[in-house]
Length: 135
Image 1 (cartoon, one colour):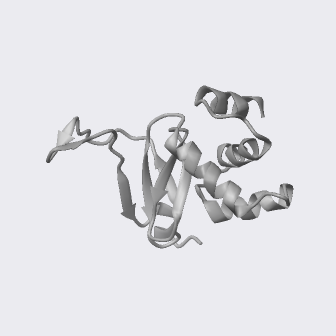
Image 2 (tube, rainbow, N blue to C red):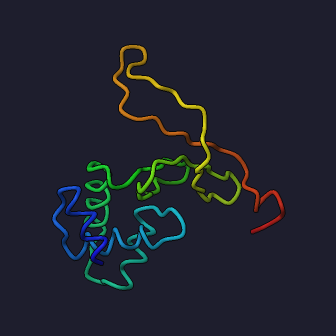
């Protein structure tokens, strides 16, 4: 939990018990989870936690740049931003994969008069596992 507390402090967020648990689930997770999935998982460990606390904490962590929101056709999923990377969404199994390969970069400061703060690639297709008859 010490690493989790440091991440929160570095982002200027008070490390409450609920925030520590929520961020720890995301850091320990092997998949990208929605707020509802995080709530259901966390509710087993901390039965007193409310849905509102989970949603508000995820919103705060996203606004402070600790988490990235990945909007899929099914739900908003969350990912910790340790190193910048992109994502691949499988239409079949609904899983999100991290993509660490270099993709064509766009060095834009403005586009059609809009200020660009960041660019995210979100690739949609069918994952290797599903193509090979998995799940």
